[in-house]
Length: 423
Image (cartoon, rainbow, N blue to C red; front, side, top):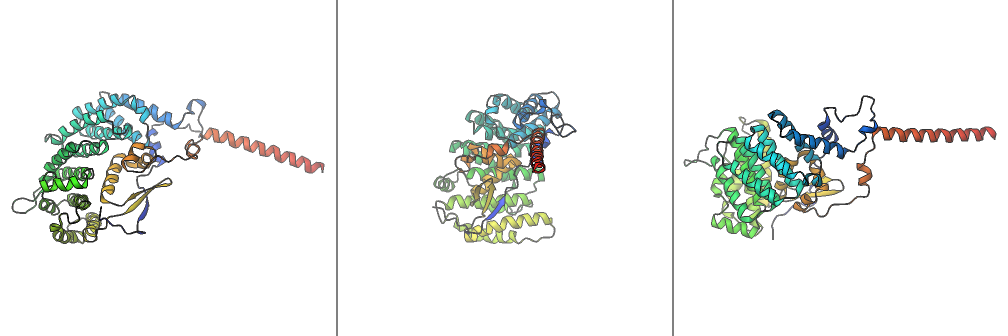
């Protein structure tokens, strides 16, 4: 049984920062082809539902994603990505998944950096929409794994591949052997930031550091999938856990993002192990508390103020967990529901999903049954008022209804005036 404790009544109730914004959705159609005319009304040919607008735009973008122009392909991929972020449309995508898969593969293999990164994000969104499609996930995992290990690829593409690969394993809940193998791949990457033999930090470029951050993040996400008993067994056998001394060494990295990512991974590792063994890695606890305490109070002037602030906030949470076994706790409200973030594992899972889905996260939390199952939100809530709320009337319809109501009210007043006159 887990020893994690949370302060009851102290949870922060927050609105999701990635919640949908109508202006963001409408920006997809800012080219004017689907906008209302200058009079503020739509004619009969334009009275189509929002869903039909998205489908029309999506079909056109899928077609444009195969054009010869690289710029056209990138723009098309961006539009497809935005639509899949804001709309849950698995039925529409089911008949077109092979086409989109083909687009993703070609873009990843032949495109330049911008196109490759867009395609990697799109691939993950496609799996989220289709509910962890096994066959597609397996094919994509092989492609992404090859990119991760390809040292000739750019750092940013390899970083995006790490994130996509970890997310596909997480969504598909693959065989534990595949998960462990991928975690070992990630460890080989962020090992580039381990301290050297003389205990000094290696010289790592900013781009390489971001790759190490992505590998650490992917490693932490996959760690949440391993049952606590198996996790402790793998650690004892030295199968999946890097030497704790090496992880502690990463806390001395000159890159703040590497330090913060490592702090979260250490907290995750301890949480996973402590769920099975209360004394898991306690021999490192005093050293970790000392280092974490220094990072939580870091006031070195040569660091940027923003970096110091982010680092202190992260390591205050890690220090509280190390000393008092208290995890960060908050609530994400969407509609009439709430997602409780009360462990390191669920915090990391939600954060990684937000990175992929972006501002459409609340739409998927509400409507995407697969994602609700992944986050253990239960069955989709059916609200009788949803259909009435979502089916917004067009300006022309509202205008006609208002005009009819005004006319009826005028006739009623005239009749009353006539009666008063007769009286």
